[in-house]
Length: 214
Ligand SMILES: C[S@@+](CC[C@H](N)C(=O)[O-])C[C@H]1O[C@@H](n2cnc3c(N)ncnc32)[C@H](O)[C@@H]1O
Image 1 (spheres, rainbow, N blue to C red):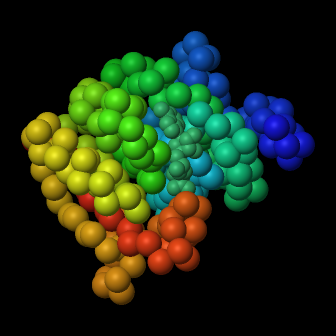
Image 2 (image 1 turned 90 degrees about the vertical axis):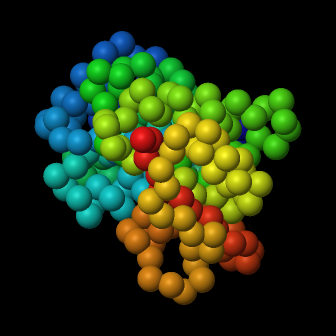
């Protein structure tokens, strides 16, 4: 591991806005940090937390939680949130599968899945964050009518997600197979992530869909 990465991993656990997924009563601690019970948006596989940061700035009366396995990536978003004094943005280091049970009681309003790993091998399909298995979980933690936003450069993964959400009675609100084609954008389309900026530079087309469960 590089020295920079090791430094970030060591430092990030000391941040007041970063919580470990294996912590007991994780949600209570996060609520204490927020100081409010405002509605929650979850960014799963948040990387640098681009959505969490951008949305927390735009919507101060809502709460945002970014989750990622890689704590060195969480370092970026959590330090930016502290610099910008965003008390409505928190981060969890660890696998989403470790924490979702806690959201079954206090549900979330919105889930964002930006550029999830494609896990291309067919046998790894259940690990895709847009697999049937994950969609079933999202249903259990969303408020009625709660929305899911999914963005990817990977056309096969996008179609896989669309097929699954149709199987799961997903209702599509908005679908765009070329987000950067110059049309007017929604807030969710407009915000870009680190991976997205990289893919756009490479000339790749970005897909986006917003849906809810019937
Ligand atoms: C391709 S990266 C995209 C990062 C960021 N969303 C972006 O667009 O810049 C996918 C991220 O998802 C995280 N990830 C994958 N599976 C996860 C899981 N089950 N729970 C939490 N994070 C996960 C990875 O660690 C990685 O940072």
